[in-house]
Length: 231
Image (cartoon, rainbow, N blue to C red; front, side):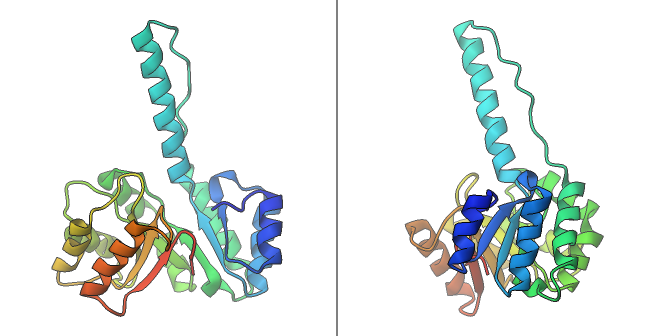
């Protein structure tokens, strides 16, 4: 989602590259640029911004902790939150104005990094809106976060909430990363995932290659995308 800034978007658009924007940092002009790019048959990836907010909040907490340990004044840094109602508004706006190009649009479903329970709660809250986007042809990426349920149970819960088993699940490989063993455990349930998005990595990395190999060993026809190759 590194093409939110006009200059970055312009450079990528000249090369006809798949482009990503951050819904939490968009403006009306940046949303319109994404719509216009979709209308040309190009690929657009829209991130919710949840990872950026998590990173900001983690850094803020570390600064406050460090100040407290040194006996210095603790900085008053307000924790950020994602307005997922607004996020879904942006997704729907782009999809509805893309002139039939929703197949070129990928978006990230609401989630809370590292919190499986809250992520499931958000999916329940926005299930109807997410399902409508999928029905429109949008590639909705659903992050699977670690928590009380093991990987296959986690996937089963997601498809119960969204009432479909063809969702593209996102596996974190950067912050709160999954292990190869946990990826293999995804396939232990009765319903096995077939579409994946590898979050926080690119095809050039060792982690990406190991993860793809693990997925392909269970499903050789798996449909796999990553942050730098979305759609």
